[in-house]
Length: 426
Ligand SMILES: [Fe+2]
Image (cartoon, rainbow, N blue to C red):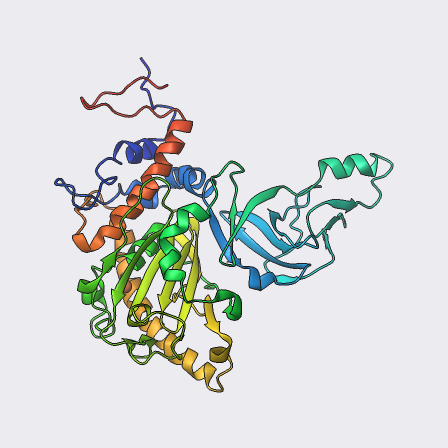
């Protein structure tokens, strides 16, 4: 008899079979454990994960302020898909495939700008900014333009705007984003984003050589900060961390905060310290001015709440073992700041001081991430028990497990039963 999951790549079956001990609350008596190594290095699993996670999740691509006027657009490549995000003349934000419907040349290269029309550089097929074909040179002998227009609109993705952040979704049937984001509401209070300025993220030039999940894992767990970032993280001691509990299947936020040793701190050239590089935001509560909040909206966004700004970043995988990243204190930008802050005469100097702190944290985390990636190729790669201060890692694993299982079900994966055999595929 044929093995029930023989149609799946062995790496995919290995991860699905091994999910149970990762998909647990942190206080499970047998431990909530690290995911199987194949989830971090296998090309076959990465292909599975692209469908499981990225083709069904809300993906942050930036802020509306980046395309504030009708005709403004920005190009973004996500999971190998060239996309264009536009502010239409209908005042709506649209996300579309950036491939010309003729033979697939990209309509815009990696950039942003303002345009009345999108014109393919290859054969000058021309589209409205909202993605309708309006003209195609020398095609009228072959087909009526009306017919060509009907079959040549740019494929549209779902779009949802949350506090001015643009999220897109490849899945037309995805549940709305906002209800899954309620855990961030208390963090968002006091940041009047509409009146603040957005400085968009700058992306790194060379890919980082590790799996995308590792960047988030290192970012979201406070267990390591005392040991990997001595001195420069002392102002935000991990032992004070408060975790927001996991709320189950419809929860799309993982977030924790760390109280500062004094109010109005932030990232400085000396690491986390007070006073912050920028003036505190007066509309924040006393509690918000005494802490840093570290959040993530998997699978692409991190978001950091400090007394002087709101900082966001984008994390995009490129392959099983490479990723690109922009903002989020990993690189410059991704900053929402009061206008009065950006107008300070010494603003550039202050930015320089903060980025020096970012550099120090980043270098220390890089050595850790490189070691973690190497471990995933070892036959002795551990599936270790997560620590209480790694509550956020068990939440991330549970978020992932839901999506891995859903994709497994779509592909006819037959789960193992308790005796170790398999139920028949449904
Ligand atoms: Fe770190």
